[in-house]
Length: 148
Image (cartoon, rainbow, N blue to C red):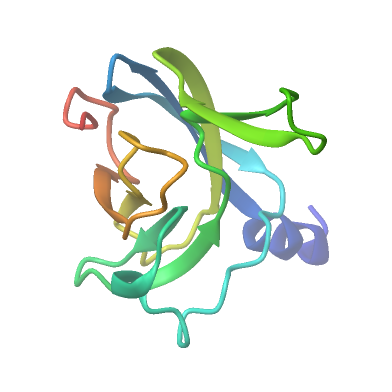
C-alpha cells in the first residue's frame, strides 16, 4: 500500500453515531467508522458553553476537555414558516415526538466520549441556556448506556 494513501486514510477517519428518539428518550443505535473527513471544529477556546443556547456536540477526552465541537440545528426541533393574518410570515417551531438523526465526529485517538448539549425543548421558540443532554462512549460496544 502506498504510504501517502495510508496516512491520508488514517487522518480522515470519522465516526458516525446514529441516534433515535421517542417521547423525549434519546438512544444511541449504532456507531460506524467511516473513511471521510468531518466538518471542521468550531472554536474550542472562545466558546463559553455556560453562556450558550442552541445545540452542539463535543468529542471529549477522559478529563472532559473538548477536542472537537460542532454547532448544529437541534435535531428534535422542527421549524416551518406560517402565514396568518399578518403580512409577513412567521417561524413556527415544535418538538418532534419521534425520529432519528446522525452526527459525524473525527475519529480522534484521545477522544473518549461524545457529549450532546441542547437548550430545553419545552418552549423551543424561547432560547434558554443549553445543558448536557447525553453522553456516550466513543469506543467499545453500543449499549443501553447511551440514553438520556
